[in-house]
Amino acid sequence: MIEEKFIEISEELNCNYRQENTKYNNVLSGSNLPVTDHYLEIEYKDSFINLSYEFGSQNIAEIITEIELKQPKEDFEISTRSHFKRLFVQNKSPWKIKNSNPVLKGKILKLLEESKLTEIANESTFEPLIKGKGTKNRFELTTRYSLAFENKEESILPIINLNKRIIDLLLE
Image (cartoon, rainbow, N blue to C red; front, side):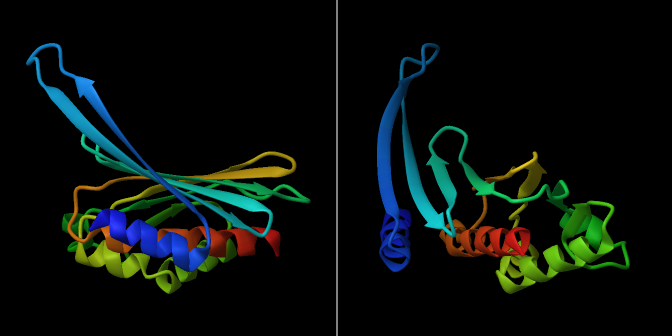
């Protein structure tokens, strides 16, 4: 099912998809651990979004987006509040954004809503850590999250869309 979703998205976005199957030998048990990696490489506005979903060992998703900029942009970090903690805080948003600029924070929250990631975070244990870090003319957006939640294939397109919208925001 995951492979079909990746193929569908790669055809929809006209991007490169590849899958790698590996077996790692567990010395202690003498068994082999099969690991499957799914990769998408998307070019968008002269930037690259590289997405990797690994199943079998760590079960982790990693998305790295490299953006060429004309001027430096502010660093930020997006994480999630636990479902338990959200029961006791007034702000029911699942997101915590570290950045001193309230305008940027508001724009990022809007992008999270528009990309449907807020909906996924509210309905599952989707808990990404998104870090945006820039230098003079380059910005790197790194996202990591566990794939230990139901309907994980439904996070692929929304996370790509978020990355595209952040590229748009940074290129404004």
